[in-house]
Image (cartoon, rainbow, N blue to C red):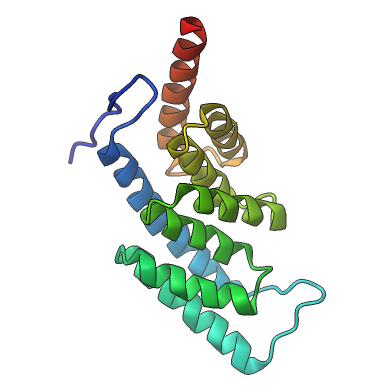
Length: 186
């Protein structure tokens, strides 16, 4: 399978919709699935003031897994609804913030997605998939400087064998080149 290259859509700063969708789909499948698996295996850790009844924990788990399944199926409205319910019960769960961000990216609500990625990072500074999602959201919002910064953070914090590292480095290279062309044009 050949992955489409990054090419200008309507200007030197834009990447093709196909490339973005491929990156989002692959990233979402692995990172969200991995986050969900980690959550299942290690359990949801509540913040000091956050206590849940067994029924609430079961509801959180069920809704979270429904949201992950809906993201995999690209049913972004349903995923967002599931993560909304999770966040009502467990607002301090960074994984739910990240996944809501990816659902909103799928719905092309980039500013709202940015906000959820930022809130996930505020809750857990080493939430790597939040930096990647934030970079994609900022690129779509035409904030190339912010996109480069978020992707640099992802690249810096990621392990050398991370399967998304090369894609992140490629996007970072393209975005930095676009910024350089923009600065040169001024």
